[in-house]
Length: 134
Image (cartoon, rainbow, N blue to C red):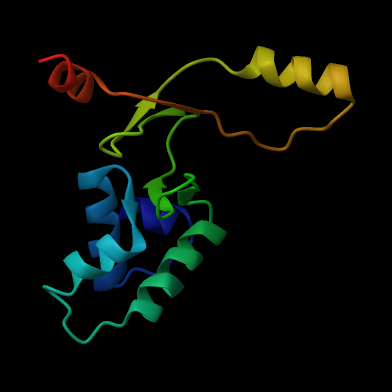
């Protein structure tokens, strides 16, 4: 609740439920949020969920994670990180690596001013690799 206040986001029961789901699942789609939140708010519309997500993104409270072949996922803003994405099961894990050197190289080489970056590593997670080797 305090985090919403710090980001100047009006506190509503629906927004608290969305934040709780993001905290619980880490990376979650709007459709999954909608399905899970309707259990407690049956009159809530999908449009309202999108409106709340957009308001939280505008206030830099959540990030949107765009993944080719999957629905966009959303996560609470955390310290800077990248993602490990399993192409078999779709799981997403955070990985904390320093990308500053890569950004400096791109900026220095191409004269491109980087405002933000997103690094995704696609492959096979440990669980799927173990399952396929059996």
